[in-house]
Each structure stands twice: as structure tokens, then as C-alpha cells.
Length: 89
Image 1 (tube, helix red, strand yellow):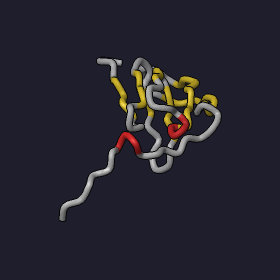
Image 2 (cartoon, rainbow, N blue to C red):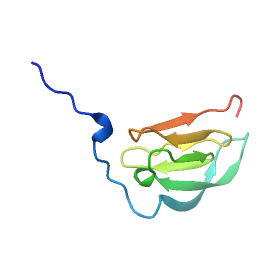
Image 3 (cartoon, rainbow, N blue to C red):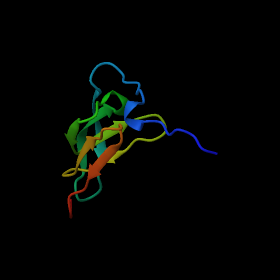
Image 4 (tube, one colour):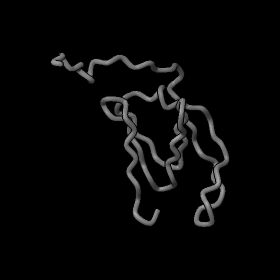
């Protein structure tokens, strides 16, 4: 069947209020890093273009991505999470 594809860039996204900051939590990153106070974010409150650095917790319904120390992340134009890993980080 033929149909018109939606323009993904125009889809609405529910964003929570408050900028996404949910405080910090102690997270153990293994022997290499130990336990670190880690910034937590409401993933759906982060607007496209938001850039952050690890360590970080991105809390969302269904999963909780963890950004390791030395890595960085950004929220893409369609709301996707891009995590950039540092070699040997």
C-alpha cells in the first residue's frame, strides 16, 4: 500500500518541566573508577541540542542509559540520545 510518510522532525515530544536535573546518586563504576556521585537527568526533559558529560544517568521509562566517566552525550534533533565513548575511558 502507498501512504504518506510522517515528517519525523515535526512529531511532538512530551517534555517534563524543571530542565531534567534529578540530583545525584552514588554509582559504582567498577575497580577502574570506584563509586562516584553521578548526576541524574530526566531524559524526556532534555531538549534537542542538550550536551552533557559523564558520569551521568539518563532516567527514562523502560531503560536507564548510563554514561561512563570521560564519555559525553547529546540529545539529537529527533530526541535520540547519542553517547560518545572515550577510548580506554
